[in-house]
Amino acid sequence: MTSSAKSPRTLHVITHGCQMNVYDSARMTDLLRPLGYRVVNAPEGADMVILNTCHIRERAEEKVFSQLGRLRKMKEGQGGAMMIAVTGCVAQAEGEVLARRAPFVDLVVGPQAYHRLPELIAAAHRRQGVVIDTDFPAEQKFDHLPDDAAPQGVVSFLSIQEGCDKFCSFCVVPYTRGAEASRPAAGVIAEARRMVAQGAREIALLGQNVNAYHGEGPDGGEWSLARLLYALAEIEGLERLRYTTSHPNEMTEDLIAAHGDNPKLMPFLHLPVQSGSDKILGAMNRKHKADEFRRIVEALRAVRPDIALSSDFIVGHPGETEEDFAATMRLVEETGFALAYSFKYSPRPGTPAAALPQIEEAVKDARLQQLQALLRAQQAAFNAALVGRETPVLFTGPGRHAGQSAGRSLWLQPVVVEHQANLTGTIGRVKITRANPNSLAGQIVSKEQIAA
Ligand code: SAH
Ligand code: SF4
Ligand code: F3S
Image (cartoon, rainbow, N blue to C red; front, side):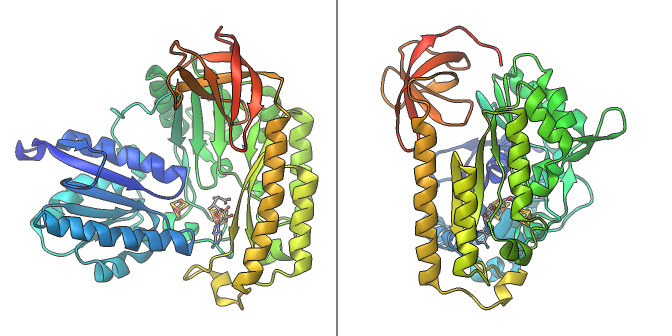
């Protein structure tokens, strides 16, 4: 490395989209730190701005172009002295379009090429015009990322799997993230140990299809997600494990069983089902029926009665009739969700469903409102049921107001207590006194560290 490469520079990172993008943004920052880049909180005046993008729905993409418009003005105001890099799923899907529509961008880097960022930056410094790298290289990007990552905190995220081979009719992810690939277990375990040494008490394993994990085990054999979770549970000081996002077709017997006998695995699962209509599930290429989802939920509740479920839903997929939508409402009513995300179907370029006759916007709006009202009521009921109960809370930091500590429950709810002393990193017993729509308030009953 030349000495000039280490001169102090400032970096601002803007992250859209899913947790995998959040993780990737942190890794890119780790990669650039040795080059002399220091993170700043605002883009104004920064030497480099990374816009890490999401392509999942039209709105997400529009945000990227409007944000680029603002960055362009700032760059001009700085006499051009701002390197702009667009990364993430819009970079992957629209690399050439971006270079044409936003020629003031210096770098377009797809999610598989982040380990090459330092050389790409050097190339961008050398030449005029946009440098694009959206290849899907054979080597794994994770193998090239630095070991000296900045600590994430009490709750840390760890990517273990990337990509998707499922090709749901509506979804861009298989095109932007490429084929399913799993990290070898040894690297995952080493990263988890480092996170725990840096203060992590809870680790959430990430992947677009995380339960399709099939990484190489230290013994040379193939490890399932369940196997990996047992190995991670042995790390001393690590108290809580989660994984997200899962596909129903990958909820294998061993993974369901792990929810019953891996005590560090939290009783909360995000399991997107998208629709309750078998016809629409078929049209979506989900390759399972609504009843199979019901059976998985039943099996999970049998081994872990306090498990809470979360899901994703799409309304207004091409072909969805009132009856199909009613089937979705029925599935939600029967299942009972602690939390759920619901979206209007958004046609994405290049995906099969985008080419089909579309449902009217007003119909989509009405269905979304109806579904969200039900989901909100279920979430409120789930939160309200905890009032008066004692439950372990992992404290993650101070609350918003002075004298408060904030943490999260077993079921991912934010919990606030009035407490002066610093509780960060400890698990305390809390009596829940109030439920809000999206959070809980409580009182400390015991500060004693309680093991999972
Ligand atoms: N890998 C995860 C999540 C993918 S994206 C999975 O397979 O479940 C997160 C959510 O966005 C999806 O679950 C889906 O509900 C929603 N989504 C994806 N594409 C969409 C589209 N074209 N329009 C509306 N919602 C979409
Ligand atoms: Fe998209 Fe379907 Fe893959 Fe999930 S499983 S990332 S919704 S294609
Ligand atoms: Fe968005 Fe890409 Fe994640 S499209 S949801 S950032 S995988």
